[in-house]
Image (tube, rainbow, N blue to C red; front, side):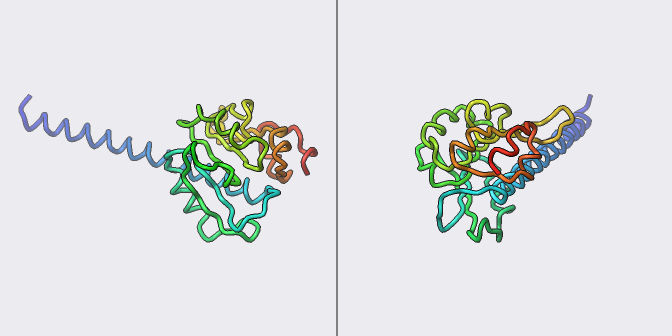
Length: 182
């Protein structure tokens, strides 16, 4: 094969790889947008016993969801309060957030997060399926038809004195406890 032909084949392979990468990035952005919309609705259709000047959504560690959350919540309010999105480290005061999102790559920090937040009114939402069984309030999951869903730990919500609207609870995969909180 001559050098020109090798260059053309390599160039085509790179373009195909880049287009696949762009599609993968777009899919990831779409997932973060869906997470962000869910998180906004968790905030909108839940009640927190704490009174503060702003509604804070914390994100543990570095995640691209921060930009998407900021875009989704821009110019919106929760109970008349401005929404602030903060990127947090495990050493920060996690109790300053009403919602704390734990991305998949930080899932191993769940035990430390739960230890720090205890029964304080912080709704811990995880990207990794099944972590609601380990103490998170809500875990996202993808079902067999590739639809984004969520699971709720009703007893943890109750212990944190958090109340979620029945209309939101009815969207969860596990629908138990619809009459327990509202």
